[in-house]
Image (cartoon, rainbow, N blue to C red; front, side, top):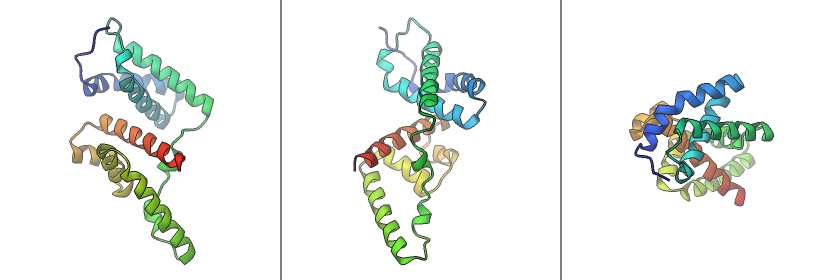
Length: 167
């Protein structure tokens, strides 16, 4: 098995639209197509050592995307909905003192768990969910392509979700 000379960013940028459009035709849902595209690239990069360059990367990434799509339809919901729906500002804006204390404890617990992440993931989670920056703003701030930022956010959410489930 020969290793690829292309960087992850090159592979991502050269194949993103192809995978996204393939999924969009299957789902007719922009958000779902983007989410599964992100998952597919994340999985491909985690398993890049299994890629054999005698085949096209496009073929390999599409097979991963098909499997991710099938898994999604089996589960019928994405795993990270709760993290995506976090409104950290809402922890602070509550008039009920008891609820405010509970929310403050949840916020402290969440921050402790975020601190357990690797620095790169910790930064991306804080930029996205605490500073409430858009993906485009994060891309500019950390000087990385938008698609790379999306993959990093996905990975960070996955790791944070696993940490929160352990309790």
